[in-house]
Length: 361
Image (cartoon, rainbow, N blue to C red; front, top):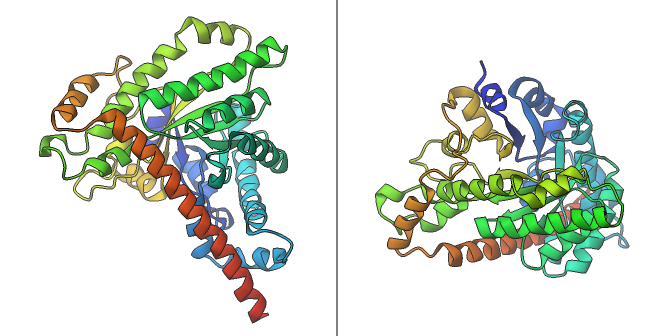
């Protein structure tokens, strides 16, 4: 059996961490769905920046949209929604078959709004309206400023992918924001079945401590943090608070593993896929990792609901001088800043491409 299908049968969803117009046009995404059990996808500014920079397939639309009265941001969302609505249609059969558990695509609000909760909510509502697809997640960062926006967006009925989570504590804060939004809907007599996922970034932990810890701890931090978070996730799903909400019709906010492409050239290229197999979770992975797992992937066990040896491993990192809480906050802040940089680069690229195309025409 195909390793990706085996992983699917273990109860984990595989989503693609990529979107390009070429993937849509040449049938690659449909192939991933049909043959590799891919059942959703995620996007971010860096992904779109790379896609637009490395393909001419966007040029016609960029030229058509070129207008001194239309901002680069508006033009970008036109381009992104054109791709993501096509992808959402490809995933519609999965969405229908799984009753909305799978088959999602994700679009991020402008990272420039990361410190403005009210504008983030406004943007989430508008993007979801423009997308017009029931299987479109809007991504909001799980930063301190993003938490009120997550609650408000869920209360407004917008499906949310909470991004930029790095620790158990950040995950729990995001999950509580989701639950508050759901509970407000229940109290208001509204349908509480608003979908959400919480995305924990994994590999960036190991990048951050590379060369700073004993060799025996290499590539072990991200997995240990994920194990600890998985325990909290399972505890939340079994909690009286969630069960009360579920009894009123609420959906569980699924845990998603993000940033699971291996960065260490000396480590296995499927390290985080094999280590993080777990039922009722999602692993969103780049094309290269997906193909590697198809070629030589194997799954022989799933994550232990009680966190396995994570606390022992994390204690070893503490002995090595790594403060997990401090590093988690830094990783989230650095991630937010990185997305802002990618966003600015993307806006500049759309403007420069538009000018170059107009000059050439």
